[in-house]
Amino acid sequence: MINLNGQNTIAPGIISAFATYEGDSALKKSQDTMNVYVNGDFIGDKVLIAQGDGGLNAVKDYLLNKGFSDFKYKVDGNNIIINAGDDICDEIKDHLKVYLNIR
Image 1 (cartoon, rainbow, N blue to C red):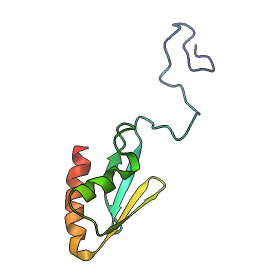
Image 2: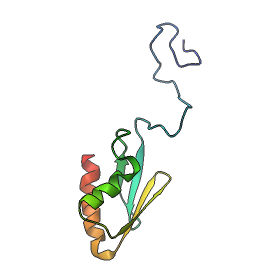
Image 3: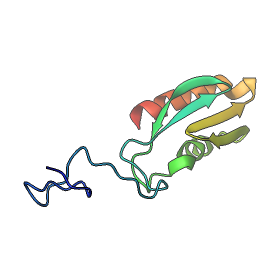
Image 4: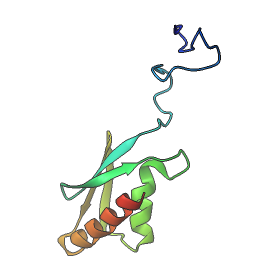
């Protein structure tokens, strides 16, 4: 049996896998993901691994570290929207495809 706190009353101390948490929505959840788009094209998902991984700015920081600076970066809900000029768009897409697959 499971009580309202998500604890198993048959085996106290064991928390049910079915327990839900309605607490602070700002806390990172185990599988938070962001959809990444470049000039309207879906590139992949950025999984937010840990609270110290750069979070919403990790993709932006990655691009800046790779030498890209002429792009616009916007977070809208669970979407990261990047707009870049046609001259660097394909290169940004290629870098992000690799980055998102290894992260």
